[in-house]
Amino acid sequence: DQQVKQNSPSLSVQEGRISILNCDYTNSMFDYFLWYKKYPAEGPTFLISISSIKDKNEDGRFTVFLNKSAKHLSLHIVPSQPGDSAVYFCAASEGGAQKLVFGQGTRLTINP
Amino acid sequence: NAGVMQNPRHLVRRRGQEARLRCSPMKGHSHVYWYRQLPEEGLKFMVYLQKENIIDESGMPKERFSAEFPKEGPSILRIQQVVRGDSAAYFCASSPPDRMAIAGTPLHFGNGTRLTVT
Image 1: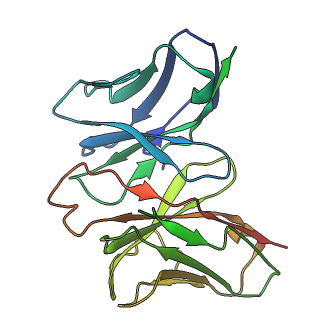
Image 2: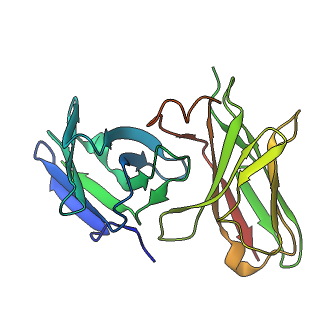
């Protein structure tokens, strides 16, 4: 039962363009969503989050959008840089709880 | 100001042996979480502990797996009689004791232990 899904296993974007990573969820009780970035042989690093009371949160080049009615969120990175090449995980939790449910990840490659 | 420390980084065990994975939380953190990442999959929650207490072990396999977080020392994830399917990356995360009061405080992860069962 995959409650958080990232349907694109990989994405390739040219440097300087916008990267858009998508995530869908099924559990309507989720109220907090996060994006993590992961380099090979390292642990996931927190990137940005959004509460269900908001529909957008921005931090520098990163913006997360939440569409509760569609149970969909997306991460926008603009402009994309080579250092953004990594695997991105979407995660969700319920009631601010400690148990995060992760998607399968999307491998982003930024081409120079 | 060390982050979450996990060791060993790599662990190779033969089938039937025991694996012990250690996690030292960030300074001031008293809550520890273990997650497992199988190849080509996302991270899956295993267990949530605070000092000397298991809070939530709903993600732990029923057999062969156990976790502890003693009053002194690191948290230990123990896998007895390992099988090939246990090969994965095991990540630990920690949070301060008041995380539940500050909803949305993100978890900070260690660099993981990659377990290979031969």
